[in-house]
Structures are given as C-alpha cells and as structure tokens.
Image 1 (cartoon, rainbow, N blue to C red):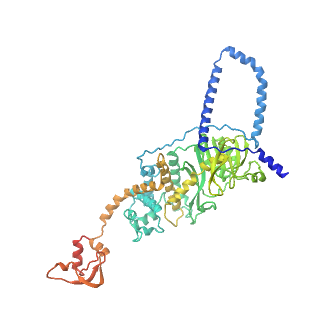
Image 2: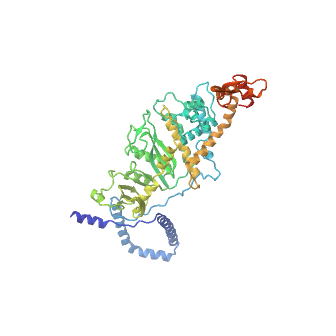
Image 3: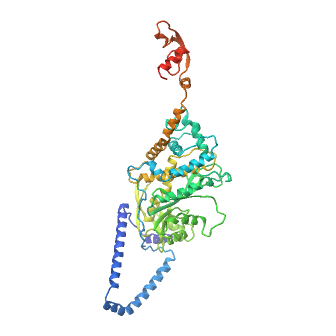
Length: 561
C-alpha cells in the first residue's frame, strides 16, 4: 500500500528539464516586451470601440441580453478562483507579475578619472570631518595641539593602511624591527596615540551610560543613513540581512549569534542592493512594549519604507520570512523572495514522507493566489516563500556531485533567484573583514564608529567599481590611503623641519665610538705628516678607526653625517 501511494505521489510530480540561465533571461525579456505590446494593442482596440458609430452601439445593445448568461457564468468562475486563492493548492498555475516601475540606474556614475578620494567625500565630506575635529578638540585637554581636517583624513588613511598590513600592537609601526615609513612620515607615535584616545564622531555627553555606545555614534548613524540613500538608486533587487560587528567587551546591546562567523558583537540590520548599503539600523535590544505583529515584522517595514510602490523584490532569510509579512509587502508594492522555516504560521502542511521521497534536483510546490512555497531537495531541503515570479518557471543551478565534479540540476526559478540575489549583505561583510579597520580599545563605541567609517569606504568602492573590469578592493584602498595621507604629509614635513634635532643629538644617536681589539691608525691623523696616532676605537656606523675627541667630530663633519 505504501509503495502504491509513493508511486502515486511520484506520478503527480512534474518533471522539468533545466534550462540555461542566459536563455531564461532572454525569454523573460521577450515575455515582458510581448506583454507590453499586448497591453498597447488592447488599449487601441478599446479606443476604437469607444469611437464606433451608432450602428455598432445598437448591435452591442442587441447582444447584451445574450451576454448576460455568459457574464453570470464568468462571475461564478471568478468567485471559485477567489475561493481557491484563500487556500493552498498543489495545482500550480501561471501568474502575471507586474513589471517594475523603475529601471536600474545609478545616481552617481563616476567617470574614468574620478578619484577614490572624491567618492569617499560623498559620504565623509569636509564639513562632516570638521565636526569630528570640533568634537575631538573638545574632548582633548587644553594643552593639546589642535587637530585639523587634514590630520583626521590622514588618521583615517593610516587606519586603512593598518587594515592592509596589520600588526598586533600599534607601537610596532614605529619600532626598529617593523618600522613603516608611510605611517611614521605622517604621525609620531605619541601623536597617533593621542588621536586614538581623543577621537570623537559625536559630542561628548558625560550623562550617557558608560556601556551604551549609541549616544556616541547616533548623530553619525542618522547622517550616513541619509547620505547613503541620496547617492545611489538601487536596482530592482533589495536584500535585507543581519551583520555582526565583532566585539567581546562589555556592552548592554552586545549579542550572541552562533550561526555567524563572528558570534559576539553588535547586530546591525542592513538593507543593500548590488553590494551597496542603502540603509542600516543598529539593534538596541528587546523592546519593552511588544508589537502585535512582532518586532521583526516592524523592523522590515521600517527598513523598506523609502522604497515602497515601485515593485522592488526584497530577498531575505528565514529569520524575516512569513506569509503575513509577504502579504504586507505586497500591499506596499514590494515583491518578496526568501527562505522560510517550516513551522511559520500560515504555511501549507506538507507531509514528511512526501519530502523524504524527493531525490536531489526534485521539488514540490504549493500555491495560494500569486504566492508560492517551493520545497527543493539539494544536499538538504530548501524552502523558499515567494511571489516575485510565476511558480511554473524553472531554472538550473550548478552543484557539486559526489565525485567532485560540477553538474547542472533543475530547480524552480525562485530557488535560483534566492541563491544569486540574496548575497549582498554577506559580500559586504566579507569585504569589511578582509581589511578590518580600527584598533583595540577598552571603550564600547569605537568598534561601531570604525564600522560606520568603513561602510563609507565600501560604498565608495562600489561606486568606483561601476564600469571597471574586475575591480579590486585592495587597489581601491591603496589609492584612497595615499590620497588621505598626502593631505597631511606636507604639513607634517613642515613640523618635522621646525622640530629637527640638533646635529649633536643626531650624531650621538647614530654615530658613537666602540672599542675593538685591533689598534689601527686614525683615518684623520694618518693624513697628517707631523702627527699620526693609532686608536682602538671605531665609529659604530662608519666602521673606521678614529681618535676619541676632535678627530671623531672632524671626520663626521667632513662627511656630512
């Protein structure tokens, strides 16, 4: 009996051959154009009907009685369809998805000669850095040398370099063994450590809770959210996901997420498109007043509010997905595609036996109106809830087989779209930790502040990448680092010349006498016919024998040491 039921289940499943990704995209484009042409033809035919003569109008009136029965029959059919839309069904039918109301267009299209510095200043403008200067000088003691916009730009550039060439201790960049001239030529060790101590991005408030980082960065968060959205128009695909800012210190909003690469830290909700951060929100902990729809539901609606009514497609993971959220987004003009948990309220019940009977590359689907649930078998079972495409559309994915080769297996189009379109926030996270900025600190807010500054760099990198063949983040960061440090380097040279040590100090530092076992003629005295002397002492740097005293100074003055 079980075998018969299993055979029945397999006989009702539709077997579809995978299609090429490029062919599918071409077919979708052609279908969209055909749909537009049909709509235009329908509008023209209706307009011609409205302009008809009285004779045609009379014929329509004579046929009205005959069409009454047909209209009643169509109404009965439509009511039956509406009743089916309220229930999940295994009968999959095609769905017409509205076309987007925008085209993929970048508001800022950099030219080939646009520098990395110019792109960064779209987000970290000189007026904003000037505010950082005021906050930093206000937090520092009265006897400290006032910082400038150029110095803080170079301070950020030094952190970019330290993210590329990372040493465990800040002092090592000025040490004899690991000295880095690109850093030491811009800052002295003590000056850099002073900037680390007093650097601020918001006004200091002594009344803030010591372990609450948000008051120290909230003005910058609001400023960046506005400027990120102002400099980029997203494509149709939006991605909402969580990212972690690694931090193990003490903070009341620190979270633990075991599935993340960095399990301890600050949780941030990010809305992105094409690896560009459009909007972000720092998780501040559980809200005391619980919402009827849930905190996650409210978070999603807040994040996508500026992009409603344009038929964007929002991709998200199972933490956010639910039929209730999908319906709410549809009412706001946003389509959805995301993985979903099997125990979400409102999902259809699919027996475990049906799922276990699936082989790799096979799937089951359930439909409710224009909403569909796809259960696809790969190495594991993947569930995707969506309404952004018709459930009868199929595609393929390249996967690894048991022998280590790549094979193409079939899947619903929604599965393929989720695999390829939901990665933006993960890519941003990988770029961030590839060249991590910031140094260790005992305070709780600097880690967040440096994540915000690095988000500006990553967005500038995405703008810089437009139109470039195989853009490289390291190349961009090196160009940006040099431009930032060069702004302060000329000022630093003036300070170094003014504070240059005397020749006697420089001589004592690098050139001093050392006693040896060999006694040889002094290189100064040996040129005098009337007076020659031998000496056991040699210069540590020059490695020549010299008499201690006048000969030592005369030799180094002649050789300009």
